[in-house]
Amino acid sequence: MRPGTDAIASHAVDIEIDAPPEQLYDMVSDITRMGEWSPESVGGRWLDGGTGRVGDWFVGANETPERSWERECEVAAAEQGRDFTFVVLGVEQNCTWWSYEFAPGAGGGTTVTERWWIVNKTPAMAAATPEQFAARAAHTETMMRDTLAALKRAAEA
Figure 1 (tube, rainbow, N blue to C red):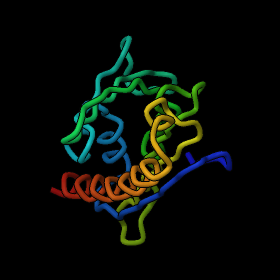
Figure 2 (figure 1 turned 180 degrees about the vertical axis):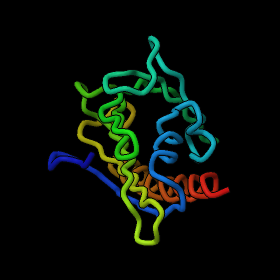
Figure 3 (figure 1 turned 180 degrees about the horizontal axis):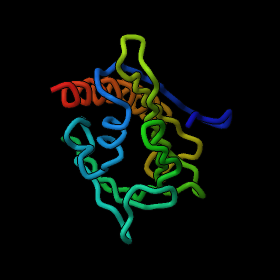
């Protein structure tokens, strides 16, 4: 899923991984495992029997040296081997979106593209100064690169 023209900040990072798209989709759509490769996420848990279908909700847990927090998220796209997208605080709130897209890679593997974009700021982002918001956006791109590198190591091991 791609950001609309209403995004106030966005990044996209991609990497080629020598693994089939279905395997990579299964890895990132299992939100309980995200802490295995994300430098900030420590995982998540499905709510109300969710399993990763569009409309399912989960709580994502995050941790930095300064703080820890949880956010409810709604699955916005769930196409096996193609696209797993979720949005912080749900589609209706339209805040922070995270997307993982899978396409055939040039070398026979899979190109994984991680996208992040913000349409409406979460309360925490709204409380940030413009400088803090810009720093957070820049840091997010670095984390995305780290996440995909760790996903590559795990998938190719």
